[in-house]
Image (cartoon, rainbow, N blue to C red; front, side, top):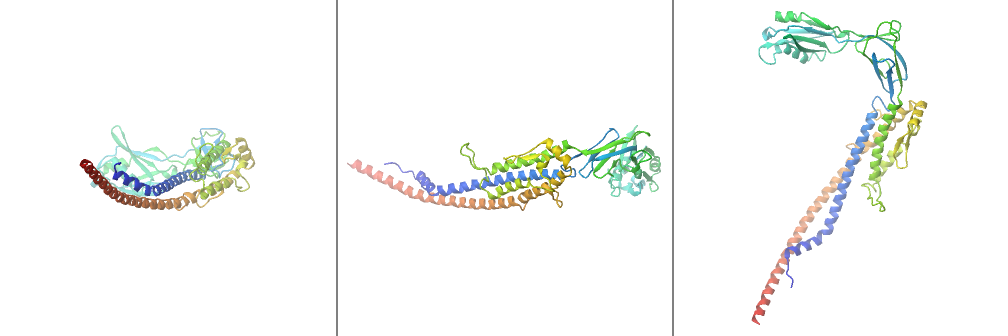
Length: 449
């Protein structure tokens, strides 16, 4: 007669009663985790895609314009979508400069005799209490501490910057206006200073750079439209920013600025959109793919998910829409049977030549409050899925509840298994004891015979 093993038999019997439910719970838990992981990947992909849409919604837009001067060295320019193609002539007479002045041999003075220093930048005046400038607590106020106090003054607000240079063993206080132009002239008021030595040093100015306005002409010098401003950046032409960098000599021919469509840069912007769309579309293809027994391909995480399939179909429909009388196909963008986009450069150039402004109308903007065109509708779709109150978040919450319920059921199953195991162990242990007793009795009878 075979020997009874209570532990083994109890385990086998308890397992047989709980195995089916254990397998079911494990399968459901794995499926829920797989769905949660797939939703996380989808959210990341939608967030990345939406980021590209936001970038393309910047002031430069999808359609790019170039802004360049025929003669280099005197100015540079950039253009946004608000610019109009055309030519503009400039004569740069004078560059704007930033006022800068210095004060040599600035002595350290006792805190008690420091007093207050008045500073004026253009029409702005403020005072600095030098008695509170002793940052190291040595009882003296140095040139460096004066500079720090000026820069830290709440009334300064970036109107000027103070620094200290050491030349020949002597400290020089240098004051630089916060902005360029004639309006940035700096003057000091030393009347409230308590130290005569400090008054003398700060009353002896050495001008390093005189603050001047930029002077340029739209057209010929003297006969065109005179432009005078404190900055070297001119933004008087809608959508165009011109930066003057070098003054021209009297009698020089004005330099010509040309603003024109930039097909190459536009194609680059368009490619950014196409690449982002193709990446998202490929992911959705993989996630909604059915199993293929012939090549051993398993089904995607959302193969039978109507919501994700609807997202995929809606995405495909939006990029085929007509906006303002134009479509992507009008600018050389085609979509193959697999849903992937590609660009034909020659067709893009023809489209820009025929309907230059239509491209930005087609793409529109994904900016909040001004959503329009392809970018707006695609961004709205992505947001409905990826936002905190979107579909992905709702489904993740549901999955978490499911996982919690499955975990509770698994814990209950473990308790049930342990209860069955202990009951069967007790029963088989008694059976083992009975088997042992029978065996001993049998041996006794055998010995008697």
